[in-house]
Image (cartoon, rainbow, N blue to C red; front, side, top):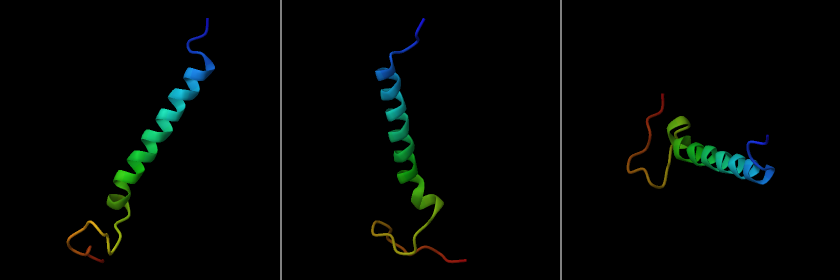
Length: 47
């Protein structure tokens, strides 16, 4: 008994990849703060 057709399985995998990419984009600045971010009002501190 098949759980999902291959097309649905590929679709779910694609959704998972997109959500992971979206998370990476959203958290990229938190993980790797850039010194001059266009949307950031103040420059980041450098250690």
